[in-house]
Length: 378
Image (cartoon, rainbow, N blue to C red):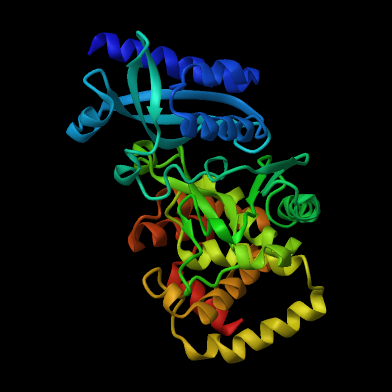
């Protein structure tokens, strides 16, 4: 077992090094040459990976996965293991991101090589081995703080999406946080790939144009140290990828910018902040004031509290609008820096209503229900 682990560790180290050095021969040298299908797939994977511009990359061996059917398939020397792909895309990730894989190795010609990279997929977390680089050939285009992924040859879509993405990054800095220095990764692949990462657009009830997809990394809260995720990459609904706008991406990139705060902010604040930013990209004060009046009469007048996390997505139209109105009110009354500080405090420690009220009183001198009363009578 020790010999197997050492051999696998060496392969994983060479595999990461090959990507960083753009050495295809080294990457393929540890793939079973008799498995032509696997070799072809690995060629595509390598061609994809080198386009992303990884600043850091490593493959870390996990515990062995002993499966009798794997031994039957690949022989007594086979060794299956979960693998953590730890990476940082330059200009996009401000810290290491972790993704789960499952590899099987076996001796061929007196040395260990990769013989399969999909057999363990059913036992991995949802969305594993569904990264943009895992789904067939891709085209990657990079801007200053944005990265766009489309299918090969679709340079027009790549260019238009990248332009919208770069404008959206600027909108988030201008309207929400000038201190955000991260970037946006936009995955806008074809209808053939309706599930990308942990986002599944094959569900007919999934009507969103785009979704900020979760990545696994270390964030400030205790739960995050165990590998809980925060939204960071934007996956575009294949049906709508030609209808992307700066507004849509500004909404999603606000989630990206706020992901580093933590996980516990209430939904009305999470979505309200994103909608606040996206509205700022399309409306002047006259239009905003008109929309405030509409939201007050059509939605706010009909409720007695801010939407709870449990009911937020059950009444999405009302919830999003009230969330927007609340954040808009907070920014106009307290200023953006104060609201960002509130968001950060709630995201870090607001795991229940008592904690949320304590944090809100510390920042605003108001509980959540008192804030709602202020909003109602403002």
